Image (cartoon, rainbow, N blue to C red; front, side, top):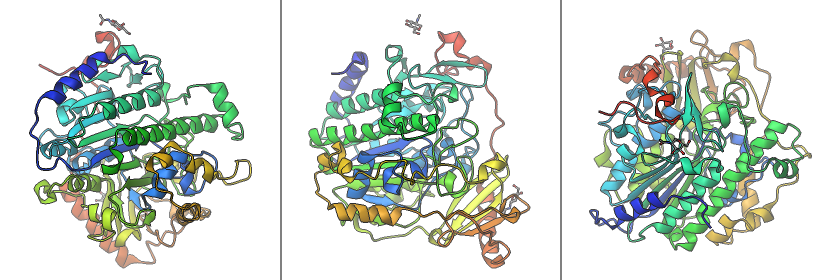
Length: 544
Ligand SMILES: *[C@@H]1O[C@H](CO)[C@@H](O)[C@H](O)[C@H]1NC(C)=O
Ligand SMILES: *[C@@H]1O[C@H](CO)[C@@H](O)[C@H](O)[C@H]1NC(C)=O
């Protein structure tokens, strides 16, 4: 039974859903459930080959759907989520830098339509649960102002898992809101479970004659309280369950991912109970790579990939991703095509029956046909990043083969190898039976053979491709790096001097991208935002 007292919130939803919205001809469009994990590393899901942190529900989703094996994002959360919700490069809006800080008046441009805004035109009911991090200075730039019919979550970049406190530079305050109302009554409830409860409730309350877009944007696996603590519901139980992981911090992180995985199972289960799963698309991604060391470290692992969150090495931007839908032909396959996070907007819009030409201009590419039929336009290249303040940019071309890096990451020593491989025999062997008995697998009910699942896992499991990093392989804006990612996914060999013509071609592309660049605003945390003025709670502070 629900222990959350969100009566007021549900009443609101109920009132909204009885108002006759423009019911369009798209009423049979699929429901779309987009699950976004935070700072979860390449090696932190079971289907990528590590035995350290079992993720049976996520694995079941991946094996029954499509594994997106070349899914790229921006190196941190605000630019990634900007691309996700606008379908455009964050460089167009000055949002390419480090994430928006609590108390900073930065936001998505108000005249650029968002994915939920466009989906509403197609008749969708839209909900966001969890993290936003795309502006909260005034109401019109928060989720409720940007296309979400309902919102439950936190506006800033992270909170404590239990106390829901978001910390800014010199200020901190409670950050959990039902639409605009502080959700003080949820204090002390574990965030992953709380978000899942609300998601279950939203699905349960949904009027199925209308398509639903539910974005479940988790806190997991970001570091929690004060950006430091790795909080799990029950420390003792957690340390028993993951006692085989020697590093106690990694053990706690495993617990955070375990809760995330359970959430995925619960969401799929309730979709099935509600008879919505057959007409749903469920997508799960991480917004950027893990932060194994450094600021906000979470002990996640991008093994064997190089670099961390905040870098444009593979560990920062190549992320785990999978999609499941009964609308996909030949499910249980690996897609090796290049995907950029901005593609999700036109792809989901097309899934909803929209004509993507109505979206122009888009940097994202509609990959819906690629998902459903494995045919259609393939992305050949993408601007991965430009941060003109920290002097770092990267471009990927030739269907994901070549990547040029001009500059270094914000923290130069983030560009090395970090994270555990989880493949030694300290971890229990991979438990395919746990996948088969997971709520997600049972709800999907497709009986995909064990051999096939293990084969898929093998296909996307990378071996140890790491090599010592030579000085000419440390990138900066005087020493550009070029990698052949098909041959060298661990970025061991800088080919910039070997293939000058490829460097020329990609630097030309980068130079073109610089032309559309909108410079970042200088970082300014507004003292008027300070939660001490508002009962130690974050509120919007620039409304009239
Ligand atoms: C390379 O980086 C430097 C420093 O950020 C920048 O001035 C220059 O325009 C960049 N060149 C290209 C082609 O990206
Ligand atoms: C202030 O916040 C507390 C929770 O921290 C809440 O119980 C109380 O009702 C709030 N006071 C006012 C005046 O809103």
